[in-house]
Image 1: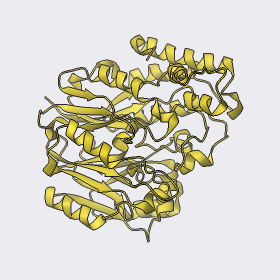
Image 2: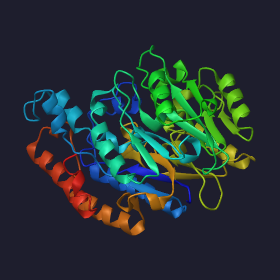
Image 3: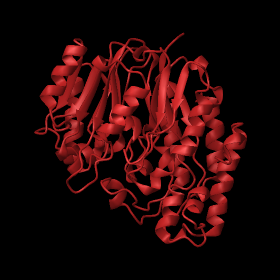
Length: 418
């Protein structure tokens, strides 16, 4: 079995809009009411996937969920035409595009049964995301149906779980046993803490992780209050490297000591607040980057365009590259439509360490397959969605027809009604 890290990106759906549904997500709330551009958003995401392929990375994809979610509205005894505006917006949200919130993944080298475990996230803290998991679970069970995987349903409410955005794995290399780090928040302050310790502990048990190689680490209150609604807004890990802001964790010194004890070769790259403030880190999504090791072995940080446009962040990155640290290359991608709703390059992908041969090939992409998907997006995705258009029956028909066209083209018609 040839284990490799595969980045599964969520294709940005045809209902992408700026409804500002996520308190604590500063970009999403700041851009509420703007006109969104679903076609441009999806093509930006496809361009990012192409850039990953150009680096030699293995790339997967998840398809948009059915929107509006008529089943969720029916559970509230209402339909889309008669629902209150806020329920319409919540039913139409394209937030499943952020695949980092789809699930938590523990690769086979870390688990007692030597199988890769995935647990769908319940996302119960935010109404517009709380109804994603059935559609997500259907895709996970299809893509990872091979016996090499175990796919779990979500942790039950009220314990909030937001998936891999609050989970990191550090290891000598992807095929070696690692240290899994679950980052949780504590309620309090102006914004909700979305990842509960109880949920993280339940997932660790379900995934059959070794307790002595599993860490539960509290996110700092300051980071949450500054708008770091997920840990991946202030920290990212890859193989032996942890890249984090100075104020990411409540007990930084204790966490670092535990990491060094469990993984002596760990390299911690900490960005001082004196060089990059929390505000600049969050506005630029410096840490919501993909930290990857391409086949050429040069550890690479894939950052959004906003990182280059933030003076303190770009100065830090240039100084980092001029030094002798483990991160030796920075690539810049344009995902402005996703960023405007509060999701950077890392939000758009779920990392799965597995043998590609064990994955349903319909969920893996190459340049030619991405070209076919881009053609469908260009032909069917709405060009614009104005804030007052989300109740327009013609728009809803276009959104539903666009998704159907995609699923038919990808031979995934079984997902149409999920």
